Image (cartoon, rainbow, N blue to C red):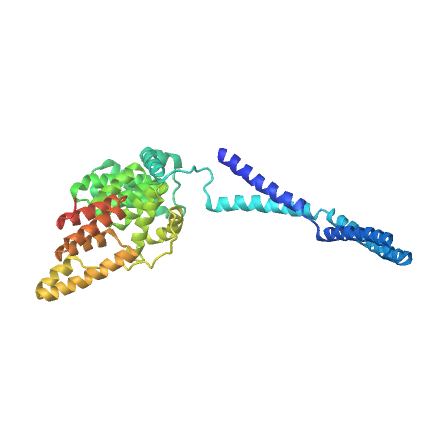
Length: 408
C-alpha cells in the first residue's frame, strides 16, 4: 500500500506542475498587443515633450497624436480578442489531457512490465523465498483433493469403460498381479483418471523393484503430476530425482524438473533447463511443444532477452565414448587429430550456444583423454556454475570430473 501511496503522490505532483504550466501559459497575441500599447503611450509622451521644446508644431503634434491614438485602439482590440480566445478553456482542456496521459500511461506501463503486489527484493532474498515456497508447498494428496473428482472422458467407449471396471475388480482381488496393475495403470490414464493410474503405477514399481525401468519411473511421475492438475508436488519431485539419478538426460524428467522450478519461484532455473532441452531436441519429443509454449514467458521472468533457438535433432554432438574407442584402430597422430577436431568444435559451440549437461560432460572427458587437465578443470568449474541449480546435471558433471580427476 505504501508503494501505491508514494507513486500516486509523485504522479499527482508531476501532473500538477504540468497543468500549472498549461494554465499559466502566455498567449502570444495578447503579449504582443500589450507591448504595442506601451510603445504607443511612450510615443504620445514623446510628442508632448517635443511640442514643449518647440521641435513639433501644434498641427504636427495633433496629427501624430491622432495616428498614435488610432494605433492604441487597434492594439487594445487585439489584446481583448486574444484574452477572449484564451478564456475558451484550451489550457484547461490541455491540462486535463496531460493528467490523463501521465497517470494512464504510467499505470499501463507498470502493469505491462511491473509486478503489482510483489515487493522489491534482492536476488538472495528471492532465492530464499523460492526455497521456502518449495519446502512448504502442498502435498500430492492435498493438491488432488483441491481439484475435486475428475469426470470421466466424454468420448470414452462404453465397452472400454466396462472392461476397465472388470479390470479394477480383478486387480482388487489379485493386488500383486504385476501385469494386471500395468494394464490398470494404463487404462485409468487413458480414461483421464490419473489419481487411480498413479496408484496402480506405484504398485507396479513396488512389484518390479530394482527391475523397474526409467520409463516406469517417469510414467509414475507423469501420472502424479497430471492427477494434481499439472502441479509438481514434493512426492512427484522425489520420483523425478530418482529418474534423473538413473538418467540425467531423460527428457520427461528434465521437463518436469524445470516446471517444478517455475512453480516454486525459480524461473531462471526452469529457463536454463528448457533451453537446453530445446537445443538437444528432437523436434517430435513430447516435451518440446509445452516448452515452446512457456519458455518465452520464463525468459521474460528471468530477465533474459530471448530468441527461441533451432530445436535440436536429438543427435548428441561432440566426441562420445564410442568415438574415442573407435579411434583405437588409428595411428597415434590420426587419433589425436580426430579427437582434437571434435573437442574444438564442441568447445566453441558450448561457449557460444550453450548445450546439454551430457555435452559438457563429454567435453570434460575428451579433454581428460587428451591430457589437457587444466582446460578440463576449467570446463568442469564453468559447468558446475552453469548448472548449480540442477542436481541431476551436477551429478553427471561430477561423475565426468571424477573420471579425469578434476572434480573436487
